[in-house]
Amino acid sequence: MCGITVAIGLAGRSGYTSASTAATTAANNNKRKLTNGFTSHDHGSLEYQLAESLDAINHRGPDHHGTWISPDGNTGFGSCRLEINGLGPGGQQPFSNRDGTIHAIVNGELYDHHRIREDMIAKSGFKFRGGSDSEIVVALYEYYGPSFISHLRGEFALCVYDASRQLFFAARDRSGVKPLFWTVHGGRLLLASEAKALLPFGWQPEWDVRSIIDQGWLTEERTIFKGLRKIRPGNYLTCLSGDHITHDQYWDHEYPDKVSIWTITSLAWRQGHVSYVGDVPADLRVQNALETRTEEAMIEGVRSKMLDAVRVRLQADVPVGIHLSGGIDSAVIAGMAKHLLDKGEVKLGSTGSHRLRCLGIAFDKGSGFDESGKS
Image 1 (cartoon, helix red, strand yellow):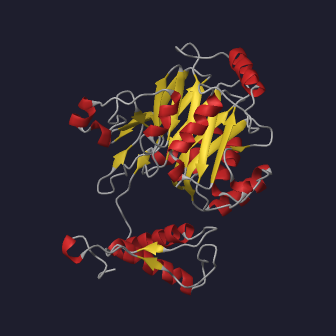
Image 2 (cartoon, one colour):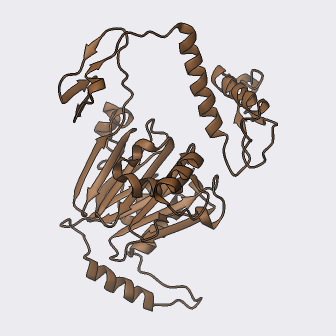
Image 3 (cartoon, helix red, strand yellow):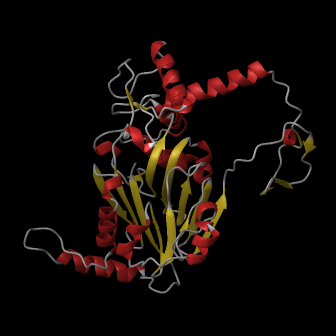
């Protein structure tokens, strides 16, 4: 778990600071010194606000705090990191490419990153500075542009700033495991892993009673606070030239119906509640022959995908264990991990041990919540 925070000046919005004004303010700030030798910054400066924002969510990533501020002072990224992959300075965020045009911060874990890393080195010669899984975001974006999101596998909330295009891009993973909230306040687009990280930028929370009553905070982009939204699972947000903010879906949980046959013949087509517009490949224009796999083949297919999912999640630069809840799901995961270890197909985290460690939680016997006996 890590924490991220972002502030982007919006052109034409109230409170927006021009590049020249920001540069003058930064220069004046740098001239002031405290008696202990540290640079003093105004409480309203972006550097100070980013630092305070990260302090508010330090529990998410106590191993390292890092910031990046654009030369014009209008865009700032902050990250507090919990080290799992790529320990040490090489994994510290924010990340940037060699020419300083692409910058990224990531909260989460990206799976199968070793394969993607080798692929990017072969295709583009990208020079990685460390072994962090999150650094592949910069390499993928540099090569594919915004469509890089389709190459990611994991649980994540991420932000990328492309200085050459003046494009800001933020996205959440397909299931929404990692949070990312956003709002517009004081002429800025603000994003953070938790709402309280926005307080240093001057945002003040106010209950959204309608959202609470409607339970819109559960299923929509609304939250329990007025004006504060969340990027929904499988969605992304963009801001172009500090002005035009859009958000859209890149993935959904809808799957084709394999009980009946249907066709796609139009360039504008609809499946479930999601519309797709674009060039429909020829092989998709007649879609979904009835399911032909046997039951045994489907079972083996699920087993194969689950084994692969467990395999990539055992990769880490720290010790790895499994939490047993007492249910069938965690027991299956533990069994598959043991199977992979016994076959020598994986190493367990940084220790390389073949001994699987499982953890559980016990409650008072009379509480009704204790499953330690089952686990």
